[in-house]
Length: 264
Image 1: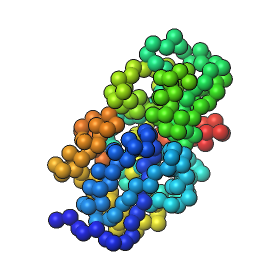
Image 2 (image 1 turned 90 degrees about the vertical axis):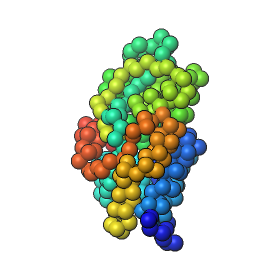
Image 3 (image 1 turned 180 degrees about the vertical axis):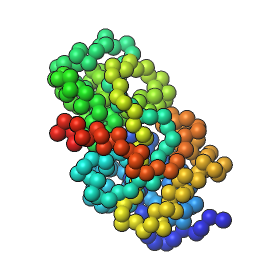
């Protein structure tokens, strides 16, 4: 039998906005409800208007759990957030993409054009892709769309010529919206975002939440919740949460060692 929910405390959980607020909520609310019931630790979503706003909540210590890859820079490591788990998705790649029928075939052709990104905090979609644009000395105008869906909407409406994107979200958007992309450049692979916990959360509660996420894969009800939620964002039905630790995110830290100063 699942433990009864404690009246107090209630912990805020902030997943990075990779899609619209409505889509983020539709994906996460069933998962958070299941984890709260199974762990006995009450979680509630706290989502900002943009991914940068959501990360600002994390940095301001207004949330207790996060699903993010925005905390691995040298400046943020000392905040003490701990990796608990991640999804078992294929590696994520930063990609610079255009519509499949775009005449643009090379990054050099973006010179002088508007290029969209979800926001300045997006590690995969902004930092890795814009670092490559800077490395190649291609002068573009950066346009932020607020989240990945916003950037894609700008791309297909013609407001930007290309977007820096996350390969997982490119694939998901193509499935959901029937759009086709052409990839101009792709980065090395990175693990999916991390389920992380603040050092303020007692270890007992942190481990109960981690166990509930990971054990979803072993429970028919949990697997159904994951499969159903995954359809909302185009994830495969077999995507589940698996244990993880800081070592899984070494590639993120390596990026910051050589990243342009404005992206650290």
